[in-house]
Image 1 (cartoon, rainbow, N blue to C red):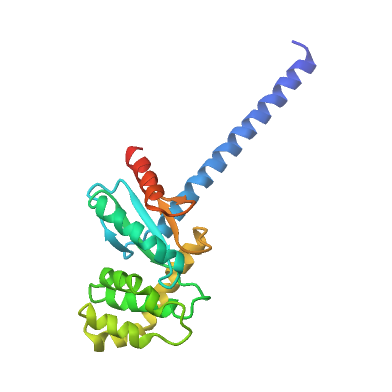
Image 2: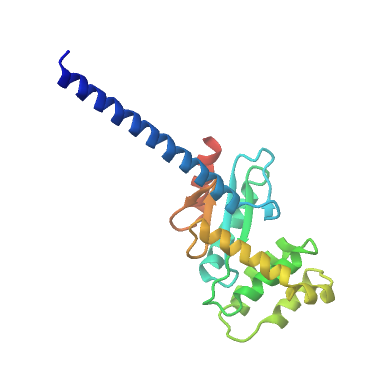
Length: 215
C-alpha cells in the first residue's frame, strides 16, 4: 500500500470517528431536550381533568379562558374527554394572554377553585359562560365570584386565594413552561409530548389521539 493511500485512509478514519462522535453528542442533546420538554409539559401538580389507567396517551392544553379560539375548542375537547374517558390523560395548563383584560383573573379564579377541589367545575363554568364575561375591559371579579358560589366554593376562602401570591407564582410557572415548550398562542396542544398543529377540531384531535394509542 502506498504512503499516499495510507495517509488518505487514515484521514478518512479520523473524519468518520469525528462524525460518529458528533452524532452521539447531538443525539444525547436531543434526548436531554426531550426530557426537559416533558418536564415542562406535565408537572406533578398539573391539573389532570381526565386520567388514563395505563398512562399511554397524555393530551396537554395550554389555554387562556378568555381566548375565543379556546372557547371554540372547549366543546371539541369535552367531546373527546367523554369518548376517551379512562383511556387518555387530559391536562390543563394556564397561559393567559396579556391582550385579554380578564384572562389572568379567570386563571386565578380557576386556581382558587382548584384549592377547594373544584378546578374542573370552574374550568367548565368559565368556558360555558365565556360569551357573558369575555372581551370585557371591566374587571369581572364579581362575575367570577358568582361562579364560585354556583360551584359550591367557600367564597371567603375563594376571595383570599384569588389574590394569593402563590397562585400568581403558579400561573407564572405555567407560562414559563409553555414558553419553554414553544407555546406562542392559545390553544396549544401536545399529544405525548409532540406539538399538535392545525385546527383543534374533534376529528383532528381524535386522529392524533388514535395514532398515539396505536403507537
